[in-house]
Image (cartoon, rainbow, N blue to C red; front, side, top):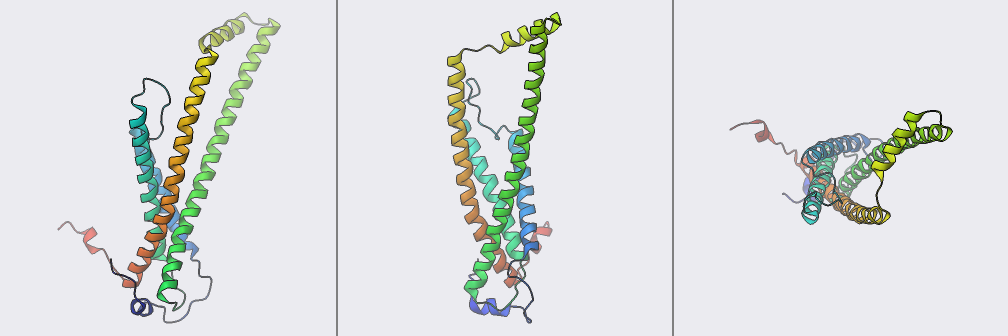
Amino acid sequence: MTERTEALTQSAAPRVALEGSYVDWASILAGAAVASGIAFVFTTFGAALGLSIISPYEGDGNAMAALIAVASWMLWTTISSFMAGGYIAGRMRRRVDAAEADEVAVRDGIHGLTVWAVAVLLGAYLLGATADTAVQATSETASSVAQVAAAASDGTTGDAVDAAGEAVAEAEVSQADAAAAAETARKYSVISAFALAASLMIAAAGAYWAAGVGGLHRDESRSFKHFGRWT
């Protein structure tokens, strides 16, 4: 990759200074949209291949191998998607003045970092909405069970009593087994959260770097014509 030079930076500067902020939100939103789209596609493929979650239960394969596979896929998905979004933001950012080479590089990188922040906030919002839906569904189920139990205690329906009794019998599990399963699930949740946090931190650096590369290619007016050719 060609290094950014002062001569290249000044030759690509706008002939007339543009009005407005140094932050180009259109390029940031475009990069965040692309990053989210790529992450969604990769996550869907991962779910189809069984690489979306780590099972804490016995009989579901080697736990360590599953952990490595899921962590590797999470790293690849997160870093590659944010780097693609950062590159697009840097490439699409409009330069507003004839700043020095280092300043232009920093502005391009900050746009990539902002793409990362916007996409992370969007993902957190969607995850929170999904969690709220799950909690609501659980509450509705608990309410239904409570109604059945109340009907059974009043003796109003024998069928309700039988159904409740069968449900309780099927769901019985020793407290020791339940505690062990909960502790194992907690450990895997901590590991998964740590892997996600680490991948997001690396992705932030990757988005910053990719945005700088995109800005350099913008100033070079570099094209990729061979991408559209078969020969």
